[in-house]
Length: 54
Image (cartoon, rainbow, N blue to C red):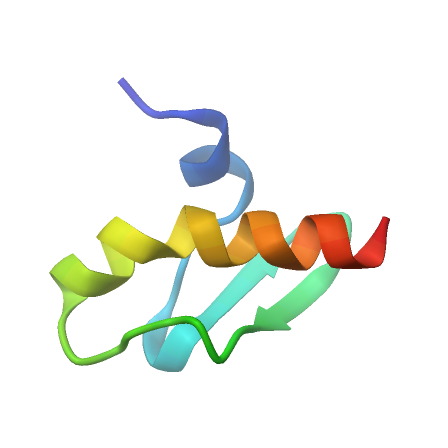
């Protein structure tokens, strides 16, 4: 089962994520050392971006 972050904010390489409503996002909080690290950390980083721009 996919959570809303996974559906709305698919993460790509190099800590970049694309949101249909916002565009490309980049966060220094992303750990791009491994795909698993991105999967583990991306929603926290995106949550920080979201709150930062509200």
